[in-house]
Image (cartoon, rainbow, N blue to C red; front, top):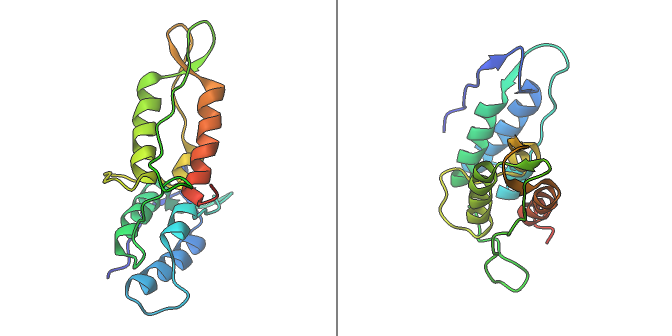
Length: 167
């Protein structure tokens, strides 16, 4: 398996190169079955890297995409994550709001669909990672209908617990 080459950026979202390089080496050793203890899917989904204060770093988008793809190479490929009773998790129902700030229906619905597919072990083009869940930002709406901000934010906290296996 070849080591990925990430674009180096001086501005914008970027990750510390040394931290990413060390983690990528562990991923490749796990995929090639040359190390113990190995990197797990949980490790991939919860990986976090510092952003360099000054200076260059790897493109966050490219690293995140690599980590998502890497799930397919690991011995403990994604498992079906279901609720405590082994049943499928159901998508949330959010309250629409009009006279106060809300989140765009389209943005939230698209993201929720990916989260639900990820936690229920269904095929999804880009499974949601904990890192992505923590950084997601929805388009705010003010004069049109949108979802209640507090309800969506509370649900994101719950979804993070699902992805990290704390629920």
